[in-house]
Image (cartoon, rainbow, N blue to C red; front, side, top):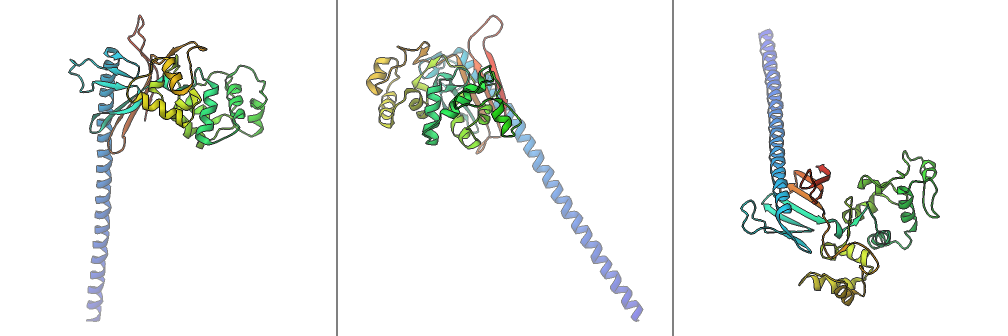
Length: 307
C-alpha cells in the first residue's frame, strides 16, 4: 500500500509538472502570437502612412506648380478637384489634409540659409536663443569651417584645433553639405544646435521675406527688439508687407537699399514636410524643392529625407 500511494503521488506530481510546462508554453506562444500581430499591425500602419504621405506629396507638387504665388502663400486654383486645400501658407504652418495627414511649406527667404549665410543675422539668432553675449568664436569657427584655407581666424578654429581636442573630424573647408554639420563647429553643441536648427535651411535664399519668417528670424535678420517685433506682427496680421517704406515705419529698418536680392517675396526654393500618422507621426517626408522650371524638368529636388 505504501508503494502504491507513493506511485500515485509521483504520478500526480508529474501530471502537475507537465500541466505547468504546457501552460507555460501556451502562455509563451500566446505572447509570441500577440507580438507578431503587433509587428504586423505596425508594418501595415507604416505601409499605409508611406502610401498616404507620398500621395500627398504628389498632390502638393501639383498645387505648388499650378498655384499663384503671393507674398506669404500659394493660392490654389479654386476650380481644382484634387484637394480641398485652397491656400498653402509658406511660413511653415501645419495644414491638415485629413485627420492624420499634414503638410508644411516653408519659403527659404523666411529662414537663415546655410548656403549663403547672413552671418550677422546668424550671430544675433544665437545670442537670442541662447542668451550669449560673445558669439564671435562660433561665427569665426563657422567661417573657418567653410573657407578653403587652413588659417584660423582670431577666434576661429581650423584642423589643428579639432585634432588637438581629439575629435575625429576637421573643418570641411567647403560649404556645408548637411545641416547637422553645424553641431560639430567649434563653440556649438547639441543643445545649442537643437535651439537654432528650426530657423536654418540648406536651401539657398534669394533675399529676405518678412511675411514668411518666424519671430526669431525676424528679430535676428532685422536686428529689432520685442516692441518692434510686435508692431511688425500686428501689421502683418492684417496685410502683407511689401516695401521698405512700410518696414521702416514699423521697425526703423530697411533691407533693400544696401543689399541685392528679392525682398518681401518668396524665393523659388521651398521646404516641404509631409507627415502621416496621428497623434504622432509614423512616416515623414522632408524635401527641399527648386520650383524653377528648366528644359528637362518642371521642378528640382535638392534633397530628400524620410523618417
